Image (cartoon, rainbow, N blue to C red; front, side, top):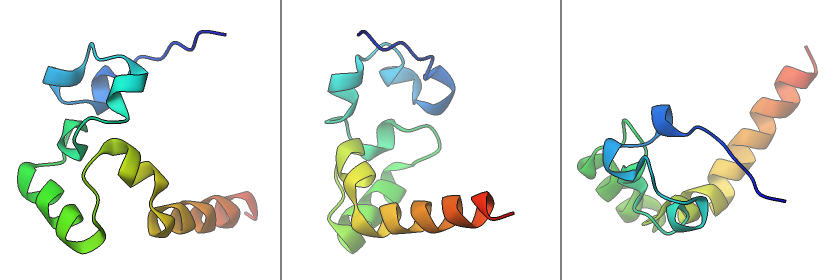
Length: 74
């Protein structure tokens, strides 16, 4: 089943028309608001180079799980 989503508000303009499977391998700076220096800091601290790396990072996943569980318990 094809997936469709309007990601324009969360992507840097250069990546707005990029297919989802290509976004996974795009640099983390492809996310709107993530500067090149932010991307460099993520790379240095966590080895994160791509959007996929960010999405699969165990620390970010743990934080997301904690926030989701806390919100569900309200």
